[in-house]
Image (cartoon, rainbow, N blue to C red; front, side, top):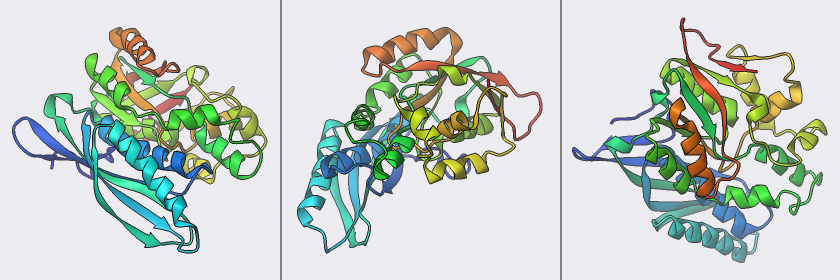
Length: 310
């Protein structure tokens, strides 16, 4: 076992031979959009994202679904079709799965991939003087909460929905091209939660410029109106005492920075002199919102507060 539970990384990595290792991950969740086909696509992209975050490529996937027997099975068929199409787009194959009767629909995948040792990008690889780059905007949890409550329409968050369907494959390839050594994806623990884990496991401090973090249109307004995902509060509580916010970052902005994401972007630590090139590559590869959002600094003393938001 090369990467296991100790570092809370995106996926497990198990040695196969002198060149390659197996990467394994699993993820599933309840619907965040009304369209079952789109839900299937988002869930599949989200599950495979952990493979890309580790520098690998997905090979096989197994469906995991909970579905109420009382609902029309055509809905489940559309969910599975969305997942299948996204897996095929990734060049992988679905090899089976398991479904149970569940009062609330759930869908996701267990994914197996391969990674070459030279391409491995664990969370432990961030170094002082690295730049921090985020490839997708945040705020999808707030928008999904507003959608469920009737505060916005699905049309209003269509841009975010489309982006959640985008694989992180090209973003991972761009990071690999410039030699990035630390990558994670932004999902349920929010931007600051995942960055905190990277900083802690790497023994560094992360400084985030909140004004540079890309956020979906309408997120601040929705959050200010009270449409904040329950997970954001849990994430914020978990990070209490571990993050220092400057006085001009209000509670709404803090909630956004802790907002749980679904099929979010990659969070990449890369040498500062390669940051501009990486952002250019990312934008050319279909992630136009990619931006440098901060920097990695040396940690003089080991303590919990390893993120500063300015």
